[in-house]
Image 1 (cartoon, rainbow, N blue to C red):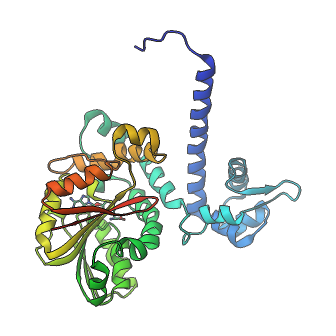
Image 2: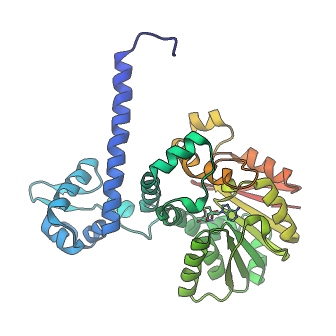
Length: 357
Ligand SMILES: C[S@@+](CC[C@H](N)C(=O)[O-])C[C@H]1O[C@@H](n2cnc3c(N)ncnc32)[C@H](O)[C@@H]1O
């Protein structure tokens, strides 16, 4: 029991207000998910300023529910309401965040990922209480699509223009024709980007989650890429193939034995090959992240629900978590046997580490 016995009512009300706002936000997230999945935001983006009936007709949703939904969204600032004309619209900024998939600020992937966590809340409680692992594949499929949708803009915006150029000598090799392994590739977004950009290179993409690999193959086939192949494989069992570049995007901390896996990846590389590890942005140190990293509440939340359980479900079960920070990540890469490790790049959402030698 806490030592302080008297309650500061003002502080209680401040905390209550702050949590109340979070709860309102969580309802708004569910509203936003409905709008995304039924195409209401996209219909609004297409129509411009419009009344409830017109939006309902364009999105093919029930008009009465839509009226309620629009009010909730307008009160939250997600859509705009002109009370005099009784019409709703999206500003360009609202459209960018809620309706336009191709824009880097589209947040629907993250929302989808969060909603997916609420679907099997009984499993989350059991995992949390018992400490058992929860394999990646046991999550609702929103987790896979939401993850891909959320990460895609960062990869599309930074992988080819910033992260690969930040690695010593790698871009030139890829242009000429190199062998690349994309490990823990999920739905294959990073693999597809690299295969498109570097047609002389061969990309082998691996993930142990069969349904993700099936979806990744479908996406690559639609693009007609002949230099990209997908394999169902554990990250620790990648064949020795003298890869010039091995990479892991937002997945190393999900693995049970990141050090053992990095050591085995080292064996798959050519003599002067590079291992690129892309991890979520984090600061060094638990207390430092809590105090100074604005994304840490969300990231430790995903760590609790997804990343640490995914790691604990595998052998060793280190449970590194998504907020390890650059120093710890570099220490683990050194422990895996890499002699030359550095932080090659940093972007809003990611840290990019380079390991060689
Ligand atoms: C957060 S997702 C990231 C997927 C993808 N790299 C991306 O950025 O979109 C983590 C991925 O790592 C994969 N994964 C986790 N542990 C693995 C392991 N030991 N071997 C292979 N894949 C693994 C999961 O199946 C999942 O697809």
